[in-house]
Image 1 (cartoon, rainbow over the protein chains, first blue to last red):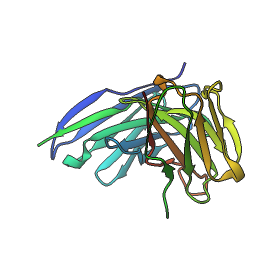
Image 2 (cartoon, chains in turn red, yellow; image 1 turned 135 degrees about the vertical axis):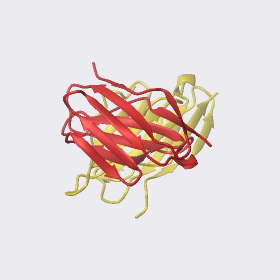
Image 3 (cartoon, helix red, strand yellow; image 1 turned 90 degrees about the vertical axis):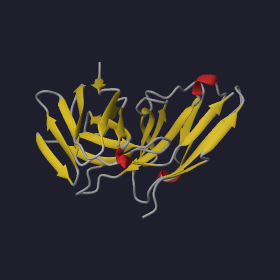
Image 4 (cartoon, rainbow over the protein chains, first blue to last red; image 1 turned 180 degrees about the vertical axis):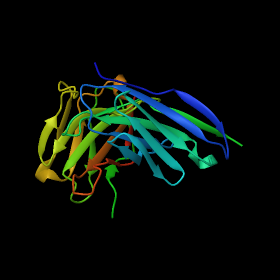
Length: 110
Length: 116
């Protein structure tokens, strides 16, 4: 079967750093997406990894290890507005068949 | 650039009634997705279109759900008859595979359906 695992919930402090992990077992792999979703809103795109390594975008970075079926999203200098769910999604083939994780709810405390 | 537009934002219906959702994707996006999302879960794909062709509808409960994408642009998703378990947020998304694009999906605001 196809499976994506993420922690259900994490808590961090404003100004700190947090790492949200995602492990996947899929029939194929053609890239991994991270999305942010605030409560009651639609998911918005954060990052995309298709090759191993780290992709940095401002305060957010995403890492991929294809051999380990593992990715993480790193959020630095946390702000209260970063409180949201973070969804990991794997593109399993060239036709962009996406498998989604359940999301990690991140709670930021002052 | 205008985003993905969905309507209505909210809908409350009684069970066994029909309901329809409408989606206008981003101009030029060939791929259109309909997802269902329950609270605390990730989006679940219902159907994916490439232009006007439904290329993946394996997760669509075809006994009560139907969808169409006329002229490869706007799309509608219909449920008839609705059941209590259909209460969820229905998300439409679109994407493109233009060179230089990561083919990320852009989501609409969703329609929150409540079946009572």
